[in-house]
Length: 286
Ligand code: NAD
Image 1: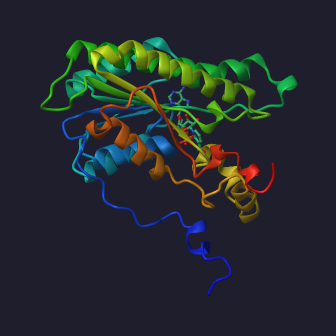
Image 2: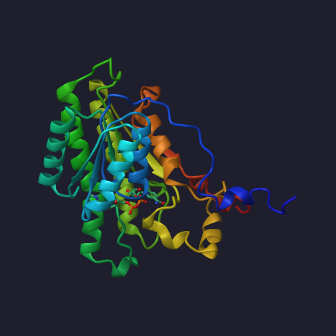
């Protein structure tokens, strides 16, 4: 018997999973920042759930086009659209193009995000504004266009019992302070109240707004935290479940929140973090 009976799943990024169920057929979905990491996995997950997909990206179109090709292999349609989510006219042009292409949107996942880390006293206004611009203003601009389209179309019960669903990608750092990442944590705390306030405002129109708060997920944004065995083991001190999250863990949570199975879920943040937000230091101390 192995000394650590969890060893076989600790480093494994390819754990067996149930197939996705077709809960989102006929519901075109737009995912921002969908050419890598969590956004890519979410685009692929929503496609496996039956949705046609708008793959938003910024910069090099090649990875986004590859995601679109993968989506087509699942039998869904896909279009890659470039837009900087922090820029109003680009977000509006993206929605116009997406709605023209698919007729409407039913699901919008506001996922694009970045970090510009710095000790607080050295943080530049540019670092602050870049993170707030993409992570928070980008969520505002994306959610506003989504609400406008969902209100315009209203409910079609043949497709979904809600007029539309928005899922905001937050982080455990909407709750957990993060030294050296003040701009990022502030943006995620902002997303929490943005999400809840929009949710309260548009629920009467049967638009559901929720968030997912990932913990440590294996993506490019935090490669330094998992790419060596030493870094990985240090990270596990913060994760009671003792494995890193995979992008597909987040995709499955988004699929559920976007589906009618979650129809009475409004203004909630679903933490998908292996227990990271459970104050793991108190497991042995306190
Ligand atoms: P990632 O770097 O792979 O993905 C971020 C994506 O956003 C990239 O595709 C990037 O091109 C895109 N992007 C950046 N600026 C943009 C802009 N102005 N307009 C459009 N797209 C833009 O990293 P990820 O981990 O997949 O991050 C996705 C989201 O998940 C982010 O909001 C991040 O804060 C959040 N998150 C990640 C983790 C984690 O552990 N990986 C944890 C908590 C929250």
